[in-house]
Image (spheres, helix red, strand yellow):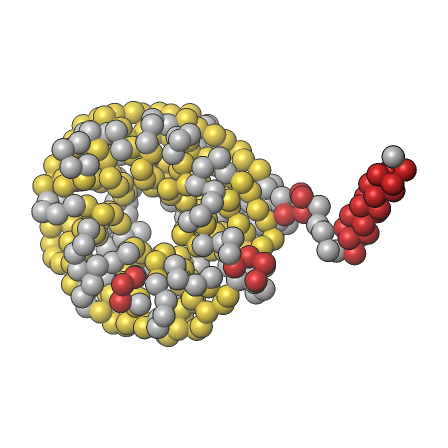
Length: 350
């Protein structure tokens, strides 16, 4: 009995000593708000199917909005007030993020694959499919002022992988990414018609557009490369070879000067100087994070000091200090989000 008591006392003493020496940190050390960072992060999760609004500065969830089952994609307007979410069972949900309620709900088809807003936010584009092959082949265009009425149904060849809009109203274009294809179709929101094709030379993993709308980034996972395309001439202006890497997701800093690219093969993030079209280099995650963070979705903080990272292997939000690549905040979500959108402190989108 005394021996058991002695062992228990010794263990408690060792834990206390280790904690005081910095070997063991309290569980809540990474759940505190970041001073001076007032960004909000909007997540779309499935099972449970919710739209979540998270405050980085307060390190807490502000709202949880229930959606229809099987959430698939989400887009948020530039003011950060309205979210459009589509589901795999055919529903489009429209949420008022400030009030925390749903303002519209319409069933467009049996399968909805992707959603995008026109640069002027007057129109919404939704990939529509059927349960026959569970893929989207058409695009439904609707006015954001009346999502219940379809303006145009555009049938396409192949399966729609993603719909990506140019954020600059001066370039009213929608980029349509097809599964297993090296070409991206271009649709003009003003004329409401297809206007061209961007040839990539490989199937893109993801497609992203710079904040000014002048460049389109395509990650060619299988070819270890990132392509930079002029959005107006539709020509490739730079090809960044990332030997040994599997580039996947691209995020841009608020001013558009820097691009961050995830590597699915290694625990690292590449950084690209967008103005000079040059690779700055890459940064590795520390050893203690290397096998816990597999970056799937990332975004810059408004002040470009941090990266918001969602791992492909768990449902945690990790806030990473770019200078040290150390984790400075962590929040466990109920499920890994399928989409993440950052509203920077100034109220502009990431």
